[in-house]
Length: 459
Ligand code: SF4
Image 1: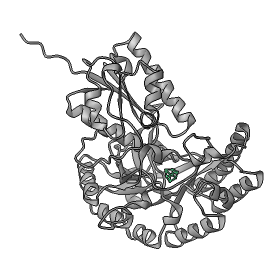
Image 2 (image 1 turned 60 degrees about the vertical axis):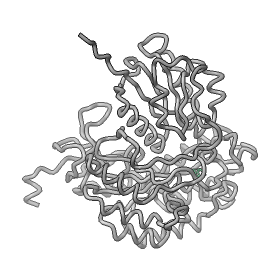
Image 3 (image 1 turned 90 degrees about the vertical axis):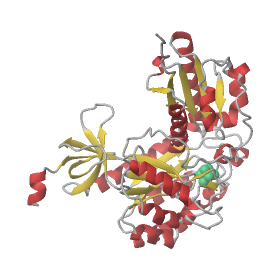
Image 4 (image 1 turned 45 degrees about the horizontal axis):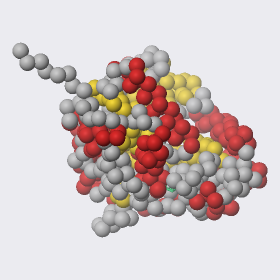
Protein backbone atom coordinates (compact mmCIF):
# COMPACT_ATOMS: atom_id res chain seq x y z
CA UNK A 1 0.00 0.00 0.00
CA UNK A 2 1.35 3.44 -0.94
CA UNK A 3 1.62 5.88 1.92
CA UNK A 4 0.50 9.45 1.20
CA UNK A 5 3.01 11.88 2.72
CA UNK A 6 1.53 14.35 5.20
CA UNK A 7 1.60 17.90 3.79
CA UNK A 8 4.39 20.16 4.98
CA UNK A 9 3.06 22.36 7.78
CA UNK A 10 3.93 26.07 7.56
CA UNK A 11 3.58 28.41 10.54
CA UNK A 12 3.37 32.12 9.76
CA UNK A 13 4.02 35.15 11.98
CA UNK A 14 2.95 38.51 10.57
CA UNK A 15 4.30 41.67 12.20
CA UNK A 16 3.69 45.34 11.49
CA UNK A 17 0.87 47.15 9.77
CA UNK A 18 -2.18 46.05 7.76
CA UNK A 19 -0.21 46.62 4.52
CA UNK A 20 2.20 43.94 5.63
CA UNK A 21 -0.72 41.76 6.68
CA UNK A 22 -2.07 41.82 3.12
CA UNK A 23 1.35 40.60 1.90
CA UNK A 24 1.13 37.81 4.49
CA UNK A 25 -2.33 36.87 3.21
CA UNK A 26 -1.02 36.68 -0.34
CA UNK A 27 1.87 34.45 0.70
CA UNK A 28 -0.57 32.24 2.63
CA UNK A 29 -2.66 32.02 -0.53
CA UNK A 30 0.32 30.88 -2.60
CA UNK A 31 1.19 28.28 0.02
CA UNK A 32 -2.33 26.92 0.16
CA UNK A 33 -2.43 26.72 -3.64
CA UNK A 34 0.91 24.91 -3.48
CA UNK A 35 -0.61 22.19 -1.26
CA UNK A 36 0.98 23.27 2.02
CA UNK A 37 -0.89 22.98 5.32
CA UNK A 38 -1.03 26.17 7.37
CA UNK A 39 -0.32 25.87 11.06
CA UNK A 40 -1.19 28.20 13.93
CA UNK A 41 1.49 26.76 16.17
CA UNK A 42 5.18 27.37 15.41
CA UNK A 43 6.13 24.40 17.61
CA UNK A 44 4.08 22.17 15.32
CA UNK A 45 5.40 23.57 12.01
CA UNK A 46 7.92 22.10 9.58
CA UNK A 47 8.66 25.57 8.27
CA UNK A 48 8.28 28.92 10.03
CA UNK A 49 7.91 32.17 8.11
CA UNK A 50 8.34 35.56 9.79
CA UNK A 51 6.94 38.50 7.80
CA UNK A 52 8.85 41.41 9.31
CA UNK A 53 8.34 45.14 9.81
CA UNK A 54 11.23 47.59 9.36
CA UNK A 55 9.48 50.89 9.99
CA UNK A 56 11.25 52.12 13.14
CA UNK A 57 13.79 50.87 15.66
CA UNK A 58 11.23 49.25 18.00
CA UNK A 59 9.55 47.44 15.09
CA UNK A 60 12.90 46.20 13.80
CA UNK A 61 13.85 44.98 17.26
CA UNK A 62 10.55 43.12 17.56
CA UNK A 63 11.17 41.53 14.15
CA UNK A 64 14.67 40.40 15.10
CA UNK A 65 13.53 39.08 18.49
CA UNK A 66 10.80 37.10 16.74
CA UNK A 67 13.24 35.66 14.18
CA UNK A 68 15.62 34.59 16.97
CA UNK A 69 12.79 33.11 19.01
CA UNK A 70 11.56 31.14 15.98
CA UNK A 71 15.12 29.99 15.22
CA UNK A 72 15.01 28.14 18.56
CA UNK A 73 12.34 25.85 17.12
CA UNK A 74 14.94 24.55 14.65
CA UNK A 75 16.96 23.31 17.62
CA UNK A 76 14.19 22.05 19.84
CA UNK A 77 11.09 21.46 17.74
CA UNK A 78 9.92 20.04 14.46
CA UNK A 79 10.97 23.09 12.41
CA UNK A 80 13.39 22.35 9.59
CA UNK A 81 13.42 25.66 7.82
CA UNK A 82 13.18 29.35 8.76
CA UNK A 83 12.09 31.87 6.14
CA UNK A 84 12.07 35.65 6.57
CA UNK A 85 10.07 38.09 4.44
CA UNK A 86 8.85 41.70 4.59
CA UNK A 87 10.17 45.23 4.95
CA UNK A 88 13.18 44.31 7.08
CA UNK A 89 14.39 41.96 4.34
CA UNK A 90 13.98 44.69 1.76
CA UNK A 91 16.21 47.02 3.74
CA UNK A 92 18.59 44.79 5.70
CA UNK A 93 18.79 41.59 3.71
CA UNK A 94 22.58 41.56 3.65
CA UNK A 95 23.00 42.16 7.40
CA UNK A 96 20.36 39.55 8.26
CA UNK A 97 22.16 36.99 6.13
CA UNK A 98 25.45 37.78 7.85
CA UNK A 99 24.18 37.93 11.41
CA UNK A 100 21.44 35.31 11.65
CA UNK A 101 22.70 32.19 9.85
CA UNK A 102 19.68 30.23 11.11
CA UNK A 103 17.64 31.95 8.38
CA UNK A 104 17.40 29.56 5.44
CA UNK A 105 15.68 31.74 2.90
CA UNK A 106 14.49 35.29 2.21
CA UNK A 107 11.45 36.51 0.31
CA UNK A 108 11.46 40.07 -1.03
CA UNK A 109 8.48 42.41 -1.33
CA UNK A 110 8.81 42.07 -5.11
CA UNK A 111 8.57 38.33 -5.15
CA UNK A 112 5.87 37.16 -2.77
CA UNK A 113 5.03 34.10 -4.87
CA UNK A 114 8.57 32.86 -4.29
CA UNK A 115 7.37 31.86 -0.82
CA UNK A 116 6.45 28.46 -2.30
CA UNK A 117 10.05 27.93 -3.38
CA UNK A 118 11.43 29.32 -0.12
CA UNK A 119 9.58 26.90 2.15
CA UNK A 120 10.71 23.74 0.33
CA UNK A 121 12.06 21.60 3.11
CA UNK A 122 14.32 19.59 0.84
CA UNK A 123 16.37 22.69 0.04
CA UNK A 124 19.73 23.05 1.71
CA UNK A 125 20.71 25.99 3.88
CA UNK A 126 20.70 29.64 2.91
CA UNK A 127 24.12 29.22 1.34
CA UNK A 128 22.43 27.09 -1.31
CA UNK A 129 19.42 29.36 -1.51
CA UNK A 130 20.48 32.89 -2.28
CA UNK A 131 16.87 33.95 -2.71
CA UNK A 132 15.89 36.55 -5.23
CA UNK A 133 17.95 39.59 -5.98
CA UNK A 134 16.88 41.87 -3.14
CA UNK A 135 18.23 45.29 -3.87
CA UNK A 136 16.67 48.70 -3.50
CA UNK A 137 13.05 49.61 -3.10
CA UNK A 138 10.23 47.33 -4.18
CA UNK A 139 8.45 47.80 -7.48
CA UNK A 140 5.81 45.05 -7.53
CA UNK A 141 2.09 45.51 -7.09
CA UNK A 142 -0.31 42.64 -6.48
CA UNK A 143 -3.60 42.23 -8.28
CA UNK A 144 -6.83 40.29 -7.88
CA UNK A 145 -5.42 37.18 -9.60
CA UNK A 146 -3.07 36.45 -6.73
CA UNK A 147 -4.30 33.91 -4.23
CA UNK A 148 -5.16 35.35 -0.82
CA UNK A 149 -6.10 33.68 2.46
CA UNK A 150 -7.77 36.15 4.83
CA UNK A 151 -6.08 36.36 8.22
CA UNK A 152 -8.58 38.88 9.59
CA UNK A 153 -12.02 38.08 10.95
CA UNK A 154 -13.99 36.57 8.07
CA UNK A 155 -16.35 39.53 7.63
CA UNK A 156 -13.68 42.17 7.05
CA UNK A 157 -10.74 42.59 4.73
CA UNK A 158 -8.10 45.16 4.00
CA UNK A 159 -7.98 46.28 0.39
CA UNK A 160 -4.57 47.61 -0.59
CA UNK A 161 -5.38 50.14 -3.29
CA UNK A 162 -1.84 51.26 -4.02
CA UNK A 163 1.69 50.50 -2.96
CA UNK A 164 4.67 52.72 -2.16
CA UNK A 165 4.76 56.45 -1.47
CA UNK A 166 5.96 59.62 -3.23
CA UNK A 167 5.83 61.94 -0.22
CA UNK A 168 9.13 63.11 1.21
CA UNK A 169 8.25 63.02 4.96
CA UNK A 170 11.55 63.56 6.75
CA UNK A 171 11.04 60.88 9.43
CA UNK A 172 9.93 58.06 7.17
CA UNK A 173 12.01 55.35 5.51
CA UNK A 174 9.04 53.57 3.94
CA UNK A 175 9.66 54.84 0.38
CA UNK A 176 13.17 53.35 0.50
CA UNK A 177 11.61 49.94 1.18
CA UNK A 178 8.24 49.98 -0.54
CA UNK A 179 9.24 52.21 -3.45
CA UNK A 180 7.41 54.83 -5.49
CA UNK A 181 3.64 55.10 -5.41
CA UNK A 182 1.82 52.84 -7.86
CA UNK A 183 -1.95 52.41 -7.97
CA UNK A 184 -3.85 49.25 -8.75
CA UNK A 185 -6.36 49.50 -11.57
CA UNK A 186 -9.96 50.16 -10.68
CA UNK A 187 -10.94 46.91 -12.46
CA UNK A 188 -8.57 44.87 -10.33
CA UNK A 189 -9.89 46.47 -7.14
CA UNK A 190 -13.49 45.92 -8.23
CA UNK A 191 -12.84 42.26 -9.07
CA UNK A 192 -11.05 41.63 -5.80
CA UNK A 193 -13.88 43.28 -3.86
CA UNK A 194 -16.46 41.12 -5.64
CA UNK A 195 -14.43 38.05 -4.72
CA UNK A 196 -14.06 39.17 -1.10
CA UNK A 197 -17.82 39.84 -0.86
CA UNK A 198 -18.50 36.34 -2.23
CA UNK A 199 -16.33 34.99 0.59
CA UNK A 200 -18.46 36.76 3.20
CA UNK A 201 -16.63 40.05 3.61
CA UNK A 202 -18.96 42.88 4.60
CA UNK A 203 -16.46 45.55 5.58
CA UNK A 204 -13.72 46.72 3.24
CA UNK A 205 -10.93 48.78 4.73
CA UNK A 206 -9.04 50.74 2.11
CA UNK A 207 -5.34 51.09 2.84
CA UNK A 208 -2.21 52.46 1.14
CA UNK A 209 0.63 54.66 2.33
CA UNK A 210 -1.63 57.55 1.29
CA UNK A 211 -5.10 56.49 0.10
CA UNK A 212 -5.90 60.01 -1.12
CA UNK A 213 -3.04 59.80 -3.63
CA UNK A 214 -4.79 56.88 -5.34
CA UNK A 215 -4.93 57.09 -9.13
CA UNK A 216 -2.45 59.95 -9.65
CA UNK A 217 -0.33 57.62 -11.76
CA UNK A 218 -3.17 55.96 -13.69
CA UNK A 219 -3.63 56.80 -17.36
CA UNK A 220 -7.42 56.95 -17.01
CA UNK A 221 -7.10 59.54 -14.19
CA UNK A 222 -9.37 57.57 -11.86
CA UNK A 223 -9.10 58.97 -8.36
CA UNK A 224 -10.21 57.91 -4.90
CA UNK A 225 -13.65 59.44 -5.43
CA UNK A 226 -14.16 57.34 -8.55
CA UNK A 227 -12.90 54.25 -6.76
CA UNK A 228 -15.32 54.74 -3.86
CA UNK A 229 -18.20 55.03 -6.32
CA UNK A 230 -17.09 51.84 -8.05
CA UNK A 231 -16.73 49.86 -4.83
CA UNK A 232 -20.12 51.07 -3.67
CA UNK A 233 -21.68 48.94 -6.43
CA UNK A 234 -20.31 45.68 -5.04
CA UNK A 235 -23.20 43.63 -3.65
CA UNK A 236 -22.61 42.25 -0.16
CA UNK A 237 -20.21 45.00 0.93
CA UNK A 238 -21.95 47.05 3.62
CA UNK A 239 -19.18 49.24 5.04
CA UNK A 240 -16.24 50.84 3.25
CA UNK A 241 -13.69 52.49 5.50
CA UNK A 242 -10.85 54.80 4.54
CA UNK A 243 -7.50 54.86 6.29
CA UNK A 244 -4.35 56.98 5.88
CA UNK A 245 -5.63 60.12 4.14
CA UNK A 246 -3.16 62.94 3.52
CA UNK A 247 -4.37 66.27 4.99
CA UNK A 248 -4.03 68.45 1.90
CA UNK A 249 -5.86 65.94 -0.28
CA UNK A 250 -9.18 66.00 1.56
CA UNK A 251 -11.01 67.63 -1.33
CA UNK A 252 -14.62 68.86 -1.46
CA UNK A 253 -15.25 66.15 -4.10
CA UNK A 254 -14.03 63.42 -1.73
CA UNK A 255 -16.20 64.72 1.12
CA UNK A 256 -19.18 64.95 -1.23
CA UNK A 257 -18.60 61.35 -2.41
CA UNK A 258 -18.59 60.16 1.22
CA UNK A 259 -21.70 62.24 2.01
CA UNK A 260 -23.60 60.72 -0.92
CA UNK A 261 -22.59 57.15 -0.19
CA UNK A 262 -24.71 54.66 1.68
CA UNK A 263 -21.69 52.42 2.35
CA UNK A 264 -18.65 54.60 2.96
CA UNK A 265 -18.36 55.11 6.71
CA UNK A 266 -18.34 58.72 7.87
CA UNK A 267 -14.88 58.07 9.16
CA UNK A 268 -11.61 59.71 8.16
CA UNK A 269 -8.21 58.66 9.37
CA UNK A 270 -5.87 61.59 8.65
CA UNK A 271 -2.39 61.18 10.15
CA UNK A 272 -1.44 64.83 10.78
CA UNK A 273 1.85 64.05 12.59
CA UNK A 274 2.03 67.51 14.26
CA UNK A 275 0.29 70.88 14.41
CA UNK A 276 3.17 73.29 14.85
CA UNK A 277 4.02 74.92 11.50
CA UNK A 278 7.80 74.92 12.06
CA UNK A 279 7.85 71.25 13.04
CA UNK A 280 5.60 70.31 10.12
CA UNK A 281 7.95 72.18 7.80
CA UNK A 282 10.95 70.35 9.25
CA UNK A 283 9.01 67.12 8.80
CA UNK A 284 8.65 68.08 5.09
CA UNK A 285 4.90 67.76 5.30
CA UNK A 286 3.71 71.37 5.45
CA UNK A 287 0.49 72.60 7.01
CA UNK A 288 -0.14 74.35 10.29
CA UNK A 289 -2.65 74.44 13.11
CA UNK A 290 -4.64 77.10 11.20
CA UNK A 291 -4.63 75.14 7.92
CA UNK A 292 -5.63 71.90 9.66
CA UNK A 293 -8.35 73.67 11.62
CA UNK A 294 -9.81 74.97 8.34
CA UNK A 295 -9.64 71.52 6.73
CA UNK A 296 -11.43 69.96 9.70
CA UNK A 297 -14.08 72.67 9.64
CA UNK A 298 -14.73 71.79 6.00
CA UNK A 299 -14.99 68.09 6.85
CA UNK A 300 -17.47 68.81 9.64
CA UNK A 301 -19.47 71.16 7.43
CA UNK A 302 -20.06 68.50 4.78
CA UNK A 303 -20.06 65.51 7.15
CA UNK A 304 -21.25 66.78 10.56
CA UNK A 305 -21.22 63.27 12.04
CA UNK A 306 -17.79 62.31 10.63
CA UNK A 307 -15.50 60.41 12.99
CA UNK A 308 -11.95 61.75 12.93
CA UNK A 309 -8.90 59.70 13.68
CA UNK A 310 -5.34 61.01 13.62
CA UNK A 311 -1.82 60.17 14.71
CA UNK A 312 0.91 62.49 15.96
CA UNK A 313 4.66 62.13 16.41
CA UNK A 314 6.12 63.80 19.49
CA UNK A 315 9.79 64.57 20.11
CA UNK A 316 10.74 65.36 16.50
CA UNK A 317 14.09 67.25 16.34
CA UNK A 318 13.59 70.85 17.40
CA UNK A 319 10.28 70.26 19.19
CA UNK A 320 10.32 72.78 22.04
CA UNK A 321 7.90 72.86 24.96
CA UNK A 322 6.07 75.64 23.09
CA UNK A 323 5.69 73.61 19.89
CA UNK A 324 4.52 70.60 21.87
CA UNK A 325 1.99 72.82 23.66
CA UNK A 326 0.77 74.04 20.26
CA UNK A 327 0.10 70.40 19.39
CA UNK A 328 -1.76 69.77 22.66
CA UNK A 329 -3.85 72.93 22.22
CA UNK A 330 -4.76 71.82 18.72
CA UNK A 331 -5.74 68.32 19.92
CA UNK A 332 -7.83 69.87 22.68
CA UNK A 333 -9.68 72.29 20.43
CA UNK A 334 -10.24 69.75 17.65
CA UNK A 335 -11.40 66.92 19.91
CA UNK A 336 -10.53 63.99 17.68
CA UNK A 337 -12.57 60.86 18.22
CA UNK A 338 -9.46 58.67 18.06
CA UNK A 339 -5.87 59.78 18.44
CA UNK A 340 -2.62 57.82 18.49
CA UNK A 341 0.68 59.35 19.63
CA UNK A 342 4.12 57.97 18.84
CA UNK A 343 7.57 59.04 19.92
CA UNK A 344 9.96 60.10 17.17
CA UNK A 345 12.46 57.44 16.12
CA UNK A 346 15.76 58.66 14.60
CA UNK A 347 16.08 56.51 11.49
CA UNK A 348 19.07 56.04 9.28
CA UNK A 349 18.10 56.54 5.65
CA UNK A 350 15.62 59.33 6.37
CA UNK A 351 16.29 63.02 5.77
CA UNK A 352 15.61 63.81 9.45
CA UNK A 353 18.63 61.67 10.30
CA UNK A 354 20.73 64.71 9.41
CA UNK A 355 19.06 66.70 12.21
CA UNK A 356 20.11 66.50 15.85
CA UNK A 357 17.84 64.10 17.76
CA UNK A 358 17.67 66.66 20.55
CA UNK A 359 14.62 65.66 22.57
CA UNK A 360 15.75 63.18 25.24
CA UNK A 361 13.97 59.79 25.20
CA UNK A 362 12.39 60.32 28.65
CA UNK A 363 10.96 63.67 27.56
CA UNK A 364 9.59 62.15 24.35
CA UNK A 365 7.83 59.53 26.44
CA UNK A 366 6.49 62.13 28.90
CA UNK A 367 5.07 64.17 26.03
CA UNK A 368 3.49 61.10 24.49
CA UNK A 369 1.88 60.22 27.83
CA UNK A 370 0.64 63.81 28.30
CA UNK A 371 -0.98 63.85 24.89
CA UNK A 372 -2.59 60.44 25.41
CA UNK A 373 -3.90 61.50 28.80
CA UNK A 374 -5.46 64.58 27.26
CA UNK A 375 -7.04 62.40 24.57
CA UNK A 376 -8.33 59.85 27.04
CA UNK A 377 -10.37 62.59 28.77
CA UNK A 378 -11.79 63.70 25.41
CA UNK A 379 -12.60 60.11 24.37
CA UNK A 380 -14.34 59.44 27.68
CA UNK A 381 -16.50 62.55 27.34
CA UNK A 382 -17.42 61.59 23.79
CA UNK A 383 -18.23 58.04 24.82
CA UNK A 384 -20.46 59.26 27.66
CA UNK A 385 -22.74 60.99 25.15
CA UNK A 386 -23.55 57.55 23.72
CA UNK A 387 -24.81 56.01 26.97
CA UNK A 388 -28.51 55.18 26.75
CA UNK A 389 -28.55 55.16 22.94
CA UNK A 390 -29.22 52.07 20.83
CA UNK A 391 -26.74 51.90 17.98
CA UNK A 392 -25.92 49.44 15.18
CA UNK A 393 -22.83 47.43 16.12
CA UNK A 394 -20.94 45.15 13.76
CA UNK A 395 -20.32 42.03 15.84
CA UNK A 396 -16.71 40.83 15.54
CA UNK A 397 -17.05 37.61 17.57
CA UNK A 398 -15.77 36.51 20.95
CA UNK A 399 -13.36 38.77 22.78
CA UNK A 400 -9.90 37.35 22.07
CA UNK A 401 -8.53 37.16 25.64
CA UNK A 402 -11.45 35.96 27.74
CA UNK A 403 -13.44 34.21 24.95
CA UNK A 404 -16.48 35.00 27.14
CA UNK A 405 -17.98 38.21 25.79
CA UNK A 406 -18.85 39.28 22.27
CA UNK A 407 -17.15 42.38 20.94
CA UNK A 408 -18.18 44.63 18.13
CA UNK A 409 -17.70 48.03 16.59
CA UNK A 410 -19.76 51.05 15.65
CA UNK A 411 -19.21 52.46 12.16
CA UNK A 412 -17.06 55.03 13.97
CA UNK A 413 -14.61 52.37 15.18
CA UNK A 414 -11.99 50.70 13.00
CA UNK A 415 -10.73 47.26 13.97
CA UNK A 416 -7.62 46.92 16.11
CA UNK A 417 -6.71 50.62 16.31
CA UNK A 418 -9.85 52.21 17.79
CA UNK A 419 -12.05 51.58 20.81
CA UNK A 420 -14.68 48.82 20.65
CA UNK A 421 -18.00 47.78 22.13
CA UNK A 422 -18.05 44.96 24.68
CA UNK A 423 -21.38 43.16 24.50
CA UNK A 424 -22.36 41.77 27.88
CA UNK A 425 -25.70 40.26 26.91
CA UNK A 426 -27.40 38.90 23.80
CA UNK A 427 -26.43 36.73 20.89
CA UNK A 428 -25.42 37.55 17.35
CA UNK A 429 -23.26 35.94 14.71
CA UNK A 430 -19.90 37.45 13.78
CA UNK A 431 -20.33 39.93 10.96
CA UNK A 432 -23.94 40.66 11.82
CA UNK A 433 -25.12 44.21 12.53
CA UNK A 434 -26.90 44.14 15.90
CA UNK A 435 -28.76 46.89 17.78
CA UNK A 436 -26.81 47.45 20.99
CA UNK A 437 -27.94 49.66 23.87
CA UNK A 438 -24.87 51.40 25.26
CA UNK A 439 -24.83 51.20 29.05
CA UNK A 440 -21.33 52.17 30.15
CA UNK A 441 -18.60 54.39 28.77
CA UNK A 442 -14.88 54.08 29.39
CA UNK A 443 -12.06 55.92 27.66
CA UNK A 444 -11.21 52.99 25.39
CA UNK A 445 -14.29 50.76 25.43
CA UNK A 446 -18.03 51.01 25.45
CA UNK A 447 -20.18 48.40 27.16
CA UNK A 448 -23.69 47.48 26.05
CA UNK A 449 -26.21 44.74 25.47
CA UNK A 450 -28.05 43.58 22.39
CA UNK A 451 -31.64 44.78 22.43
CA UNK A 452 -33.86 41.67 22.47
CA UNK A 453 -36.24 41.17 19.53
CA UNK A 454 -39.31 41.70 21.72
CA UNK A 455 -38.10 45.14 22.79
CA UNK A 456 -37.08 46.03 19.25
CA UNK A 457 -40.61 45.40 18.00
CA UNK A 458 -42.10 47.41 20.87
CA UNK A 459 -39.88 50.45 20.41
S1 SF4 B 1 3.10 59.75 3.61
FE1 SF4 B 1 5.01 60.27 4.65
S2 SF4 B 1 4.91 59.03 6.52
FE2 SF4 B 1 3.48 58.11 5.12
S3 SF4 B 1 4.64 56.53 4.03
FE3 SF4 B 1 4.73 58.40 2.79
S4 SF4 B 1 6.66 59.37 3.38
FE4 SF4 B 1 6.12 57.87 5.01
